[in-house]
View 1 (spheres, rainbow, N blue to C red):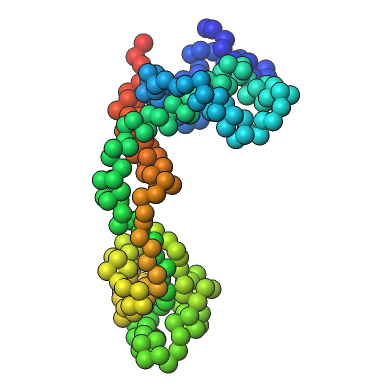
View 2: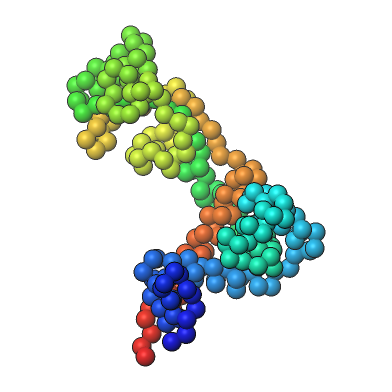
Length: 245
């Protein structure tokens, strides 16, 4: 058996590495990094891009001097060349994302937009149908403010904020509640609706449509990349299974 790692008094052999990675649930992560290496193998970066990537890497890792760089390398057990390769690798991954999915972002955004739109809404919940109906009429008739009644009667954490929730994306609330909010207009008050053990009263306060700006583009790129990664890992999990000798 070949020793590949010494940890204190323990010697790790090559034959023990894979079982240890499996034991600590690190095999999928290793497989994912190998998949990424294959995907970015043909991607090129200019010298200027490499320099910028290394500068950003130093900033991210709070490396401001040669001494700090040497200390960081020692902690990580890496050479300077390996650190530079790691810095440029991140840039290559971003280039791979752009090359693979940038032309699909608009259609993907439209598909996801219903979940990405954000809302602010008022919520009051109680387990008593008669109380819910009475509170609804008080709000509807303007006898008492929604916030006041929510603080006094709502049985969820929203009571602490006078019933106010958000802004949150429409993927956050319960699907049935999200559907109500989706078809609501700002200021629209809904009568008590049964939702599991609760009777809820809901009013949409504000609606913020999602925009395909730079930050949203990056988020969706990351989503598509992560979905692809999971699919790739699942397709290749056969290499994680013990091989017959």
